[in-house]
Length: 171
Image (cartoon, one colour):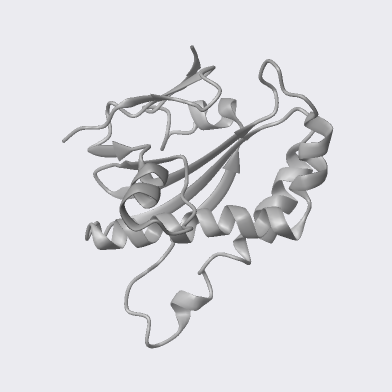
């Protein structure tokens, strides 16, 4: 099965994963309807020939955002770092159950005029410490749990050679 084209929750952007081997935006629905558990999940997952890309998307620069400044304040909180990490862990459970054993990349697409490159780098470093990079170095762990984590703007995503075939565009 091939990938699909999805809209963000605000219905203002398309995420075009039609060139992916497989993709989904349905984990939250599956978790709430099938296991009635409080598992967090990323917004999208796309499989390429060589990797599984977990995508979390936040955008404060869309129409009708009430208080983008409040989001920026939240960005630098430990609660936010943990929330973004939990979304990866919850989604990884599903992918491991599907036996998709390619490299796992996690990309946080953050579109926020108030979060400059310095803020995004700091955010990346703090979230990275919550992800299983160090855990997978334990001798009993035989499977690589995460290969890479990065935070990109929409423009950076669209110009990145690894993701440019999965364009993010305005509706």
